[in-house]
Every structure is written in structure tokens, then in C-alpha cells.
Length: 86
Ligand code: SF4
Image 1: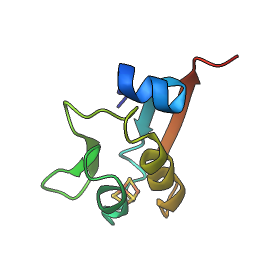
Image 2 (image 1 turned 120 degrees about the vertical axis):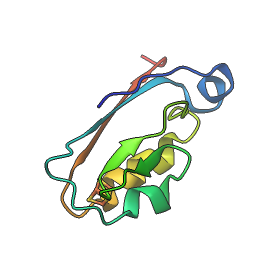
Image 3 (image 1 turned 90 degrees about the vertical axis):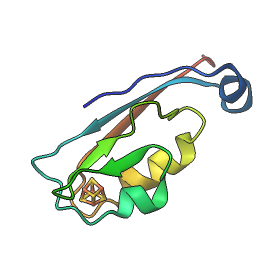
Image 4 (image 1 turned 60 degrees about the vertical axis):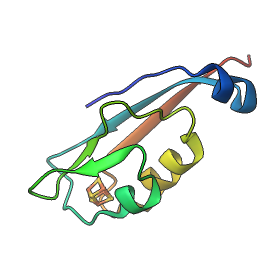
């Protein structure tokens, strides 16, 4: 699952214009750490598997998204951010 977005306010503050998030749902074991870390971006389905909130703004929560990926015990979350700075 991939979500890319752009928010002008977050862009000015962070220099990041898009954040791509991939969740490997085959790896996810449903700990919920990502939801606790970035609750505006991640949610869990009825089986506990992580997914992205449909209208989430991962640019605004970029730092938390990276933390969520780092804290995932099975490395199911991959994050890449495109910066406006070269
Ligand atoms: S932290 Fe990782 S294992 Fe836990 S719910 Fe999120 S994606 Fe799944």
C-alpha cells in the first residue's frame, strides 16, 4: 500500500514534498505500534493488520512516520520521502 501526498505548510516546514509508505501486510503481526506512534497516518483492520488512513497527511507527520517504521518489530513499513532541497 502506498500513499503519497503533498501539503504546502508541511513542505515549507520540513522541505519534504511527498512521503511514500509501503506496508508489507504479509509481515505485519498486528502489534499496533505504528498506530500508537503515528495515529493520524496508520490504522488497523479488524484482523489487526496495519493500513493507511485514507485521508492521512504523511508529509505533516513525516517524523512520526519514520519513527513508526523504525519501531515496527518486523520491519513491515518502508518509508521514502522526496525533498524539495537538492
Ligand atoms: S508496527 Fe509493524 S507489525 Fe505492528 S501493526 Fe504496525 S506494521 Fe504491523
